[in-house]
Length: 344
Ligand SMILES: NC(=O)c1ccc[n+]([C@@H]2O[C@H](COP(=O)([O-])OP(=O)(O)OC[C@H]3O[C@@H](n4cnc5c(N)ncnc54)[C@H](OP(=O)(O)O)[C@@H]3O)[C@@H](O)[C@H]2O)c1
Image (tube, rainbow, N blue to C red):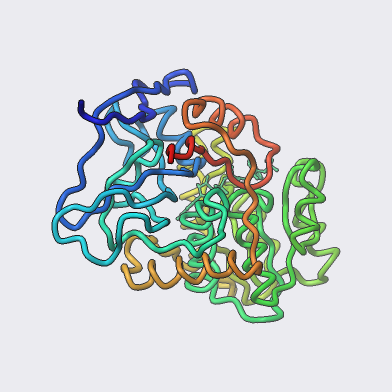
């Protein structure tokens, strides 16, 4: 009998209830691919946007499977795949599948997109670094080009990417400030940043009160027109605003995207010495950057230098519950879908 697997499918656009857990034949690896038995698959804010509506550019046609990042064990190789072997534990993104496909028990990916996970590293922690820490690393070192000692404000500081920015920021010797809702105040403090409650405090006034003249860099994955203007005002002379996300769609929907883009353009035209550097598209930084940076991040976990925050480990079959929890907010870190370990 043909071996079978389970996969989570977006059957139509809508609420978490549109996620179906389906059974199907095992996928077969093509030339240069490896089939990975998935242990952990990341859940992200983009997944929610793609699930809710087909209006966001890049949303696949239904039915499709979400999931941008996986960790698992190689169980089969396609023709000409030679750099990894069955039994290797690997991490990788699903860009080759159009940045989706990870919510499954098995997924076939190009071997060049799979990076070995050091022994002893928890798959749920490892999967957190694939997109979130790669994003944080690129925004910090390629867009902002931070220097030791700089003052940095991170929005969404308890979120998946925000907590990654704080952990990498501590390693880069930055002075850190982080906005989050009040429930995440202690999380932000424990990550080495001064917490600011964005729901009850004016972050511009608070940053100016704490620093005198503002911060050198603001990382803004939240978006919204007013938010970007205020982030810009929190900068000192010569500062950089790095905008790279729209987490505010959680509360305000896709309608916040046009004013965000307008504000970003308007701010880039102000000749006051502050900058709004363009942000890199991770998929265009090249495979050498991807492999080297992902390996560096996995080594940092193994060495205990970073500890990604896992907001919850939820069985793959309960992906809808993971989406409900992510939509509700107030969590810290990234939700991870986990599968049953294969029987010996
Ligand atoms: N460009 C890229 O390569 C790239 C890659 C990955 C992600 N992103 C972007 O980054 C965003 C964040 O991703 P994530 O995985 O870190 O999401 P996440 O884990 O859901 O974190 C988002 C954080 O934003 C905070 N937040 C939500 N609405 C807010 C608002 N109106 N004002 C201030 N803070 C608000 C939340 O704080 P509380 O829960 O404490 O309220 C939450 O901690 C995504 O939405 C996506 O747009 C971009």
